[in-house]
Image (cartoon, rainbow, N blue to C red):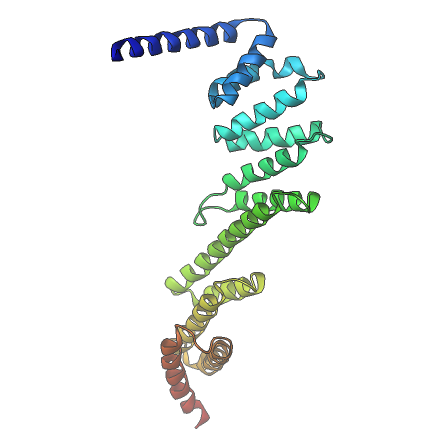
Length: 264
């Protein structure tokens, strides 16, 4: 019984492959569209895509073109070829501005760019582009059913930019380039005022100012100690119950001790 079922399955598979190859090599475009749609519905997006790619130019200007172009773009998305799906969905939206699929295509185009965003440790050019695409979608479709997801994706991408900027500033601190670290954290705090990393950023800015002052040449030391003290006071004002408070208090004690020599 099992052998007969296996044989039937093999025959059916070979028959299906034979039909696909036959249609793929044929000149007639209608069977390609029909079989491509069937394969798409069956989740065989790579095979459907190959058929669609052959006939897209032939359907330009025809009534079926709108449906074909959507399926073609979506097959790339389903295959996780987001570079091409982003472009093809944009092309669809531009070609069919009155389509009932316009909103969905516009969202999937923007989401394709989101999917291309790399981890925060890498260059974030594509992340910035994805934010721009998603924001354009939000502006164009403020009542969209995809609005909640679009806003969520934007927040995720913006947090990557925060992580990137924070990691660069922290790296300066790590390699003891304290002036660069202070400046980078100042920029971070200005650019991302509502960041969840704000406490960490202000602490490491303080830490950099403190280390710069303590290790400073004598003629610059007093000024830098006062600057570190100012950073310390600001940190304690905004983060009364900070996880860094023990370290901050230790810094405060040393800064105050160092400043005493200048007051006398």
